[in-house]
Length: 248
Image (cartoon, rainbow, N blue to C red; front, top):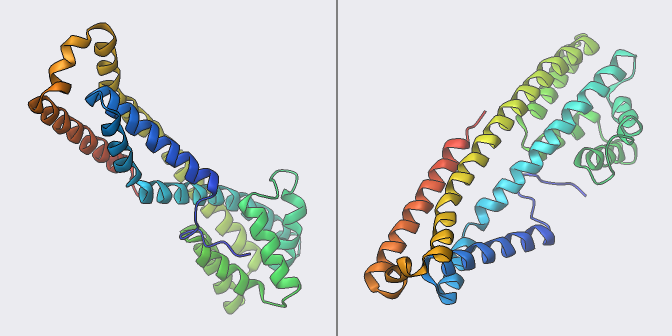
């Protein structure tokens, strides 16, 4: 079954995880800042509105996993082609080569079995199968490799040399992107820690001096100020997430 990575849906476990996270965050915020279960339910519903962003983040995460696995696949294809096999044979050989490293549920193993099935049983050309994989994955590096292979076939160039060079360049690019994304993930984690600071302060005040926050939860003016403060916190968190989401 082909996987379209740009539009793939979340699993039931992922949806449940998001729902529980939104409910927990909303209830904690409502109780801490408003001392109200009703406010917690309303805020949980507001958190639920971020589901499209969460779904997109999960898709990007899965595409990142596929990209790293594709980098490994490139090395096995390059090795097989250098030893005299064609690309179709290299794809088939890669299943046995990587099955000790990856699980059957890993995306690259699913793709290899799907592509090999189309080539072996459907009689399709390896170039058409790879082109379809590049389109479904939405990954620029996969499209670059397919373009190199297509150009080499049409021009009659040295296929092993072209694939070796393409593997080296694309592999180094993927590795660099991975390192940069790791650094960005660290910064994003730090920004989320900073965003949790107000919750920690409010919790300490509620435990040590609950009368200090009483005007903020029992008066209309206090609720307005609290809502305004929460709005500023939400805006600052969104801005930090956008700053950390740099396209490479």
